[in-house]
Length: 526
Image (cartoon, rainbow, N blue to C red; front, side, top):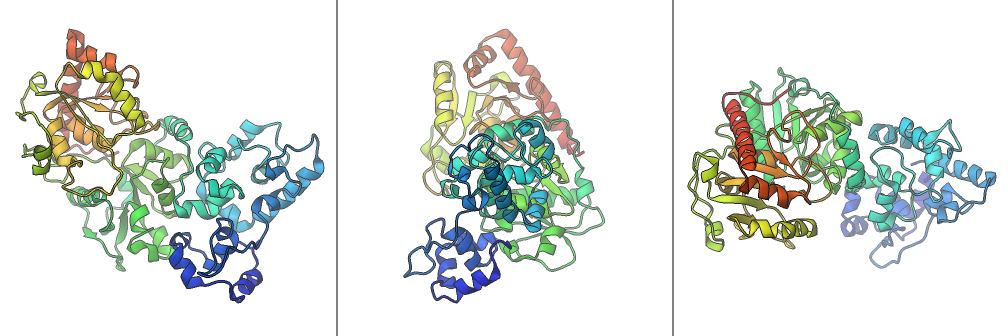
């Protein structure tokens, strides 16, 4: 950050206008950014209208980043006059102030600037072909739809984060947004990027976790309970594979290899937030988040820091990480006997489920056609899912269904009547012929826990919207693929026609055979 001099920062800190302790307590996100609080205020806080102390107003201190990029006014949203060479020169000089060696290094580490993509998409509009990053930075304002690569969307970032309107979106993301957990990849960009990743070769779990290293499996004990389950599952899997493992919630200082589950929790909020750069680099991370979310943005810097690699719960996500330059392997969650994801034994439903909901008698029949529920659908309700279910209502009304789609506008806790635990969900799935999978948004992630652990491994025939291609579960082999618009017709065919019933029987047989292979020792590991 040498475009903000230390003399300026020191002068501001000594001016009596800045209360560092108050500023950090008032704006907790400053701790996540990891830079000097006075620098944070001068570079970002003032632009957000924040106060430097309890009794002060926001103090305009420096010109906006846009002014630095383009003093000719293009960054303010005005189209430059044709052939305005002075504007181009000014923009290039402004970009040079931003493009320090430190910033260029951060961009390279991010893997988000793709020279080949940039040259291919903006050929003919490039003013500085010898420095494409500078060209992209200086073009901001006159070309908001110009992107640095296949993932980061300039317009999406500006539209999503209105407080960044006076800063270059990509600069903000690299310097601050990634640390702050700001969503940066539009669903459209993610879909296109991961759909093209199906051919990418992955590393194996054994490549990333050396067999001769003892391992600490780390998770944040105050975090999402699902990540606790993932950590316990890893303890079970790795022990079976012959590793020496220890499950921990602290910040160990021994010589064992640290395997961190959900770094956006453990490293950003938990014990790992005090680690050094060397500790981040020496760890392996378990990536758990979908790419269009703020949680993935918060995870990304830790994933990129690792010198050993990443394990990802989603096969397409793992392939995407390889595409941006990381070492990555797929970590399949399986119903290992005796693990927290083993739902093979019939168990009574939780009392709060039977108390507040009508549930058919669960009989666990051997034959698919004898299962008491025709259709199961479970997921947090949103507008997209509401419309999809409404379109299926004429079909669903003629069949026995278990539909559990609560809306949540409050924190959720175990025992809440609107919460269906994974174990309860699995028990009902084992008594359902079909399980619907409607994506929460426009992303085509295969939701492994829902589709594989809860649906396929309980013998239900999953009917899902299209998912990114992968080598592990495939449409028409392990599940039925259908667009949201075609789902009513597909359900009708499966439930009421001989051809549909034959299709369900074939897919059911395939997933039962896969479940048996897993019980016999197959682990779906490359």
